[in-house]
Image 1 (cartoon, rainbow, N blue to C red):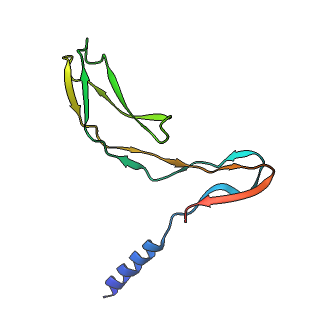
Image 2 (image 1 turned 90 degrees about the vertical axis):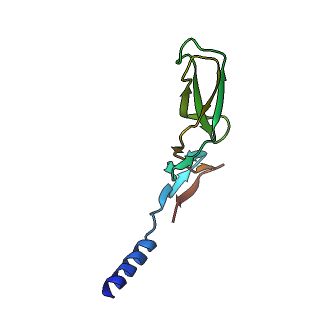
Image 3 (image 1 turned 60 degrees about the horizontal axis):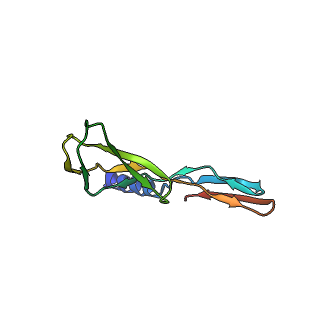
Length: 125
């Protein structure tokens, strides 16, 4: 019974532990104009892809074409998360099952002021 009580107390203690807040702007810093906080890494996001169907009209060699799989958060700035090379030089269609990938997402706060203002802030519990 004492062991069970000790386990329950340990689990309850661990459940109350929270990650420390991440300081973004510091403790009341003077900002005049535009200032970016430090970046904070959020939990990696896992991306699972559906199948890709690619075609070619014949290749001189299997390295003649590389298809890069890219992701974007805004539709303008992209990052590479995988690539595909045709396995054969023959023309035709090929199905590719890309492995899932993890991407890191970063957060920051941008302060824009019209005059000198004291600001501070953190992110998290």
